Amino acid sequence: MPTYHFETLDVFTSERFGGNPLAVFPEASGLTDRQMHQLATEFNLSETTFVLPPEQPGHTARVRIFNRSHEMPFAGHPTVGTAFVLARAAPSGTTASSSKCRPASSPYGCRTPAARCKAPKSTRRSPSRSA
Image 1 (spheres, rainbow, N blue to C red):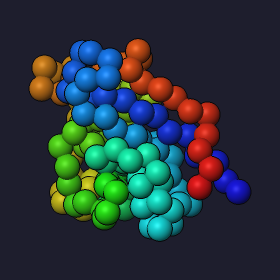
Image 2 (image 1 turned 60 degrees about the vertical axis):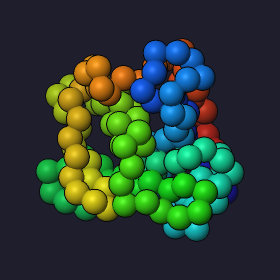
Image 3 (image 1 turned 45 degrees about the vertical axis):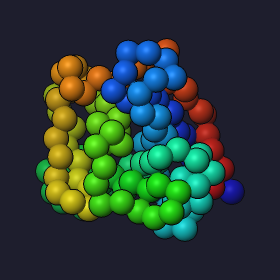
Image 4 (image 1 turned 135 degrees about the vertical axis):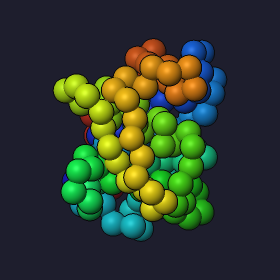
């Protein structure tokens, strides 16, 4: 059974266990729609995101957002939190991703007051998660 790395973080806060919790699977290729939904249900957070290879030229990723009951075309804190995780892993510059809604760009580091994420103290990394 394959394993997948994931991170959990708190978005829009400078306090651990504050803000909006989020689980991010930065490399979710190979997961089926059903598995993504099952993982989101298992985490039991308001949303869980899954990062996949881009479908559009010029983008660096495609992001799918699931809550416990269905896939969502767009949601604020999952988009910001996922951009934070991707930007932190990017060598430099910006990351560009797309959701089912429209393309979104985020400056490297997400350092604007409206896009704060607490890390690394509130970021928990897992070496893998079985699907």
